[in-house]
Length: 429
Image (cartoon, rainbow, N blue to C red; front, side, top):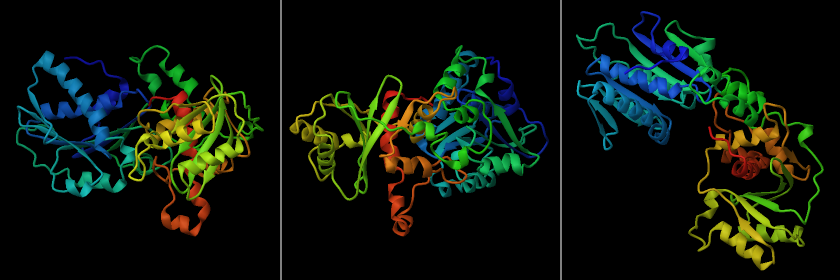
């Protein structure tokens, strides 16, 4: 079995020092071969050191199952075909067992205390920047499996892979600012992966805004607009947008009760124009419909409903879904109504990437405009941030909202607006 590795992948696999512990992170853009290299290393360690115990994990098990585990299976299928690698997979124990006594456990890190009983020879971390620093330190303390007499030139290894952080979080501080001699950061731009389809990176450049492209394709570190979720929004994105009764009107919905947030927009094939919003406190879907009908009683073209996929689920308080309620209500008022929603909501980062790409692409094109009437949406654009040192959006807590009521309007209008963009111009990350 032969692989022709990329330069960064080879650097990731090979240890350039003689310390008893090697800690490496493969930081790359989309499609840079991160997960491929990590799963290959885990299998090679299991083969080279019979009886070793490894742990593979991410903050959520869904990420482990759908990404990392599948990469392990692909490698093992290739090796089994050419080398006859003998292994078994237990879905009950979530474990790969090798005939030589090695085993690899697959876990989530949402409850790291449950991992404290493990003694490990190696650990692999998917999306390293998404786990807390304390979890990383706990994993280091688990590198204590007793070394077998037949393990020659053995080194305990912790290795992870991740996209660059949107802010300079713990990964940057640990592997760049205050790095130890046995800690290694391998940077792998997507542009250096010669196995990607021709034109792949150029297509990403068209899709992403400039700073997003630099971070998630060119794998560059750096501050990302001081932590703001929406990047590169400027006065050029603000317009006096005329409502057109003869043009399809899109209502994109977030169904939080307090507040409920809907944005109203027109769109063309490549541009979106947010001209109004309905943001109401302590309300119902039916009352929000009444408010829309009060404002736009004479709309002639279609009304297209977009928004939160979970709004298509029935609640314990109604036999109808939110979308059925909207459609029934608007049909009663005589509107032509169509519902267009996804089967399930995409990850938040996908929606944010799609929204930012419309705000301003890496090529400088602006395809998203907001009218000043959309006060709460603009409030989100200018104020919604990531938590410091993470890629998670900083949603205000109940206590914070009690102290500052305005904070309750963060996230929901932005959710409503990004559902619409993601439906028509999705970005697959």
